[in-house]
Image 1: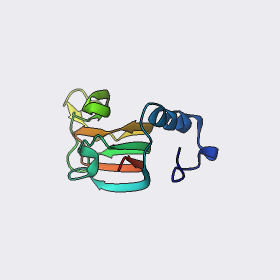
Image 2: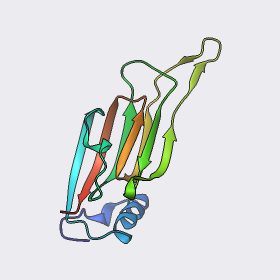
Image 3: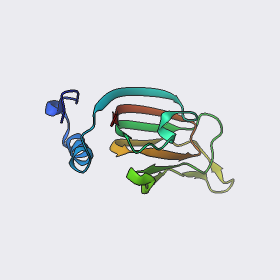
Image 4: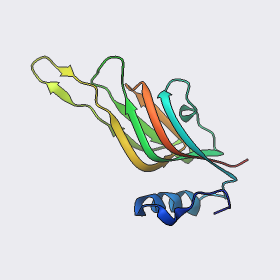
Length: 133
């Protein structure tokens, strides 16, 4: 790791594994920028793929503050813009009326190059942007 990386001395075992995954198979990242972002997803940089940019999320939360719906999914895409995994949180609260309630989706200690978000309107990201410049 280069001099502008975060000090891993106090990292959890999970965080160390995520960092090792990012640095083990990739070229050296030139810039590592800490990010705290809490705002609407629409228009955020997390939706756009760039081969020279990745994100390490220590904490990642999605919520829908508009209308509760039965759809809540996040697709995490990796290098090459291919699907790495998907996360869903669809909970049917009342079977008689098919009423859904907003369910936050929370992911800890993960990485991605881009996300596709369905049914959520807000994101909270605490982590790092890694860039090759």
